[in-house]
Length: 161
Image (cartoon, rainbow, N blue to C red; front, side, top):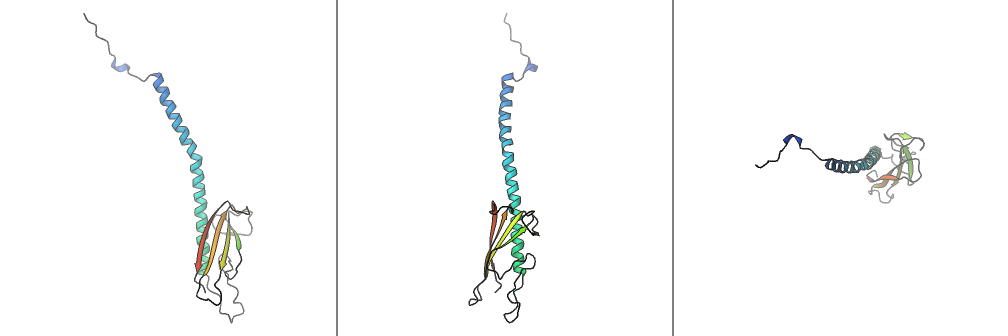
């Protein structure tokens, strides 16, 4: 008489070694994912700051383009050419620095400012009246430091001559 082995179909299970290895692989993968969270948050923060700075630069360019040209040379106040919203002196050839909050509103100092805007415009020479006024707008952050750590630079040409 031959004995047949007894098979128990309901007793199939993972061994303790298999469960331990599966948990080890899962923990290793989770550590990798958790390590990526700070990088993702930092990238998101930088993206938000760059978007806000670009929006501020766009608002300054729009303000400069909406500013009407100064009166003719026979007027006594012909040298004043100031933008309406941000107060940029378009006739000035020196750098002008402004401090702004995250929404783009002007602030008197860098104490509570989030961004520093530096505007440099170069007008066309008077002997060449058909050349556009060109300029550079740099929006940097944080505003409290003399040299911004990050910045957005926009080059513009204004047909205001």
